[in-house]
Length: 405
Image (cartoon, rainbow, N blue to C red; front, side, top):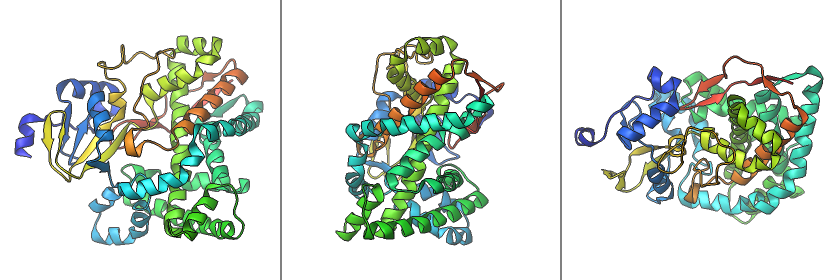
């Protein structure tokens, strides 16, 4: 690291400054050292839009193995948590590119713009049902009562899950969150138990789909299994991922987006007066406080990053949240403007690993917030400060979002 230290500045993402104000901290990093070194994480960090965009499209940089956290555990702990590692290593987006593309080809038809539009009426029905359940109270926790169950219901229906089981699926999914961050051993044990339980649950439904195929994702996987394209283990593991990622991302976007509107009342008023701005508003929410702040990559060959040579085998964090606020690309990047001209935000990635469910997440957020603002004209926050919980390696997620109406 001696040669690298001479040209690339070192930073600590776990300082009070970075954890309290991640956007401001990343602004400083981007200005001082476009390629930063994170010694505590043994990884590099990219923050400029041009560099992050190029890295997302660079085939010499593969999706980082999420099981890396497990490598830091003791041998005994690693053996105990072997099932969770086996599952992660089969997840689409977290495996080798050839396997990722193989799974993506199978599922792409479920996430086309035409298919997403066909789901709009169902998303509206779910949203009205969820709001109807809390309407008599005049208050709710947006995270738990709306933002999570809405996309969870949608993705569960796409997978062919019974309505009666969806609360259990959400509970399992919440247990899995530590896998995507810096969960401790006990949290990973809980996550592993839930993943194993979910896989066992899905195997029962998969067996039924072999006998009686439907129009759902599991039926597609079972047909592909019969042709030797996927194994049952791969199918089940990727359905676990879809159940989690299919609603976690959208839930974060809905909740973060609503907080942005609360914090910018002029923009809230503007949106209420002109609901047709909602698609642009969703893009601005993605840009200002997207559902995923940072993603990981690993260099498979030597690459040049921000003008610096980086050898193969190095972990690199791509700060999407910093790239989306790069003043070289976005005028007044820290100003929330729901009428901002649409530009290519990086919140869903680019290239091979572009998020398969990006169009679905945008549509669900659009419909959910459109209905929420229409049904609740006096919607207001019922908190002093947002319940922002730090996420690994930098950024946050909302643990709760109480509102009144």
